[in-house]
Image (spheres, rainbow over the protein chains, first blue to last red):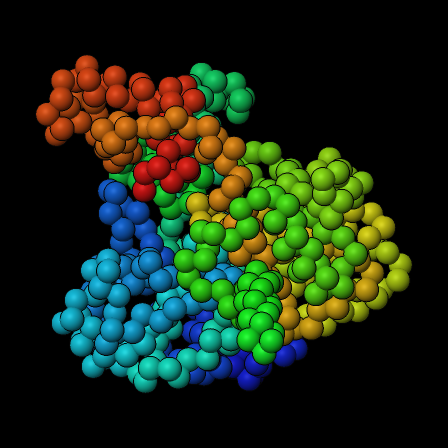
Length: 239
Length: 261
């Protein structure tokens, strides 16, 4: 029996759960979870801040291809970061496609009908914290009201735990934090108002080195200057 | 007479509903309540004590973890001896907490330890999925530590001690979820600067926001139809009001305080 099959056979709610180690395990884990809470589909999304825009990067999903194509990244990013997205410990609220919140103009009537046709009559958006990393998961069902609220809240924590077991895989898939440790440290100190020379003293390297770390960080974020690089790093929760 | 008792029952019901609302996020918490949950430290201590009672723990502590790679230390916020500070807390904030700090930054899984020689709590912890054992955070104690994270990237650690902790697997999720909602409430009060920030004008914030998006003073001046001098002045005022030494730090502070998105 391979690891993924072992995971599928093992209900994570009772007894020690098998550890996740591959993309296959991740898919198996989410399929299992969906069955447990009464959801039909899931989508794990990382939000990448790029040029002050938000872009959704899909890490794992069992949405059909057409649903992803027709819904579009912009709407997916919007759903993931909506007003109704629940942090752990907050009771989730459904984004009902048929009566979507039009207060913030998130979903138009057209899009709501589309989502309904595609089998997402009811969508829950949950925020996941995996250490400093932040991800979002959308659980949806074809029939409204079939998702069990208590199980959903437990599932949210299980997701956080499971994703904590595969940090490298997650970093690869979401590419949220492209910085090296040293670059991150430099940016942090600059954000605390330190000058290049001061950072050099703090880290015990030359100021040329500090400047090169910061330049690399700026390039990686495709930012135009230090202030923007720092803003990007803070927005994506890196520093 | 009947009416009076009915009214009393009404009041009692309302009070109980309110109590339960604060006590159990799984039961009644709804969206929007996030902003007016615990707003004072004593409130937060009370909510933490409820969690501790439900765990049958004998003590608790809440710590902040700096998100930067520097400072591998736990910074105490409060503990079960509030308003004073327990010996365990003093030990934990003094000790080198590198292992648990690193763990909190990259993972959300709870961690436990058992060093009290009784094994009561240890036996409970060993049965739990999703958690593993670590070196004792304080010698001679047993306990469990929950990493928690708030909206703006703040990290923290909720720790519960005791030799007779009761924690069935099903409860683990609920307890951790409550720690999360408690911490996000605390994270809202925590920025000490928040209350002291002088009002920043709309125009100044606009300039700061554009700076965060990579605009130079010249570009801001062109966009907002100001002189370069005025744009610079707005940014300098922003930095002063935020008690920052540079405009870069002003951008960072404004983002962390939620003044700009």
